[in-house]
Length: 66
Image 1 (cartoon, rainbow, N blue to C red):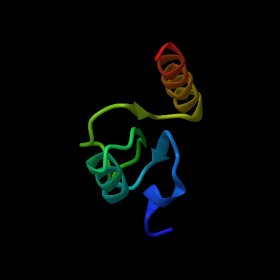
Image 2: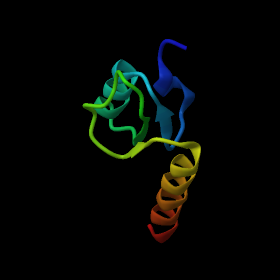
Image 3: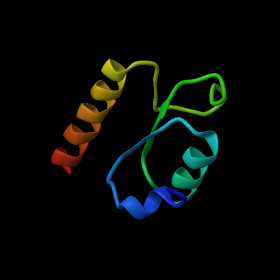
């Protein structure tokens, strides 16, 4: 998918540095799935699916609090 933001998600999980940059530039909250090409990107970052789950749950809790 060329335009990831077209998905319309509240939270994105992505590993491509270009996609992360584009999503964040458009104001979309994006979790970086760590790989060798994106080590320079700022958090939130996850090195495993367990970490992704933890970050998603944290985001959900923030949204629920308003």
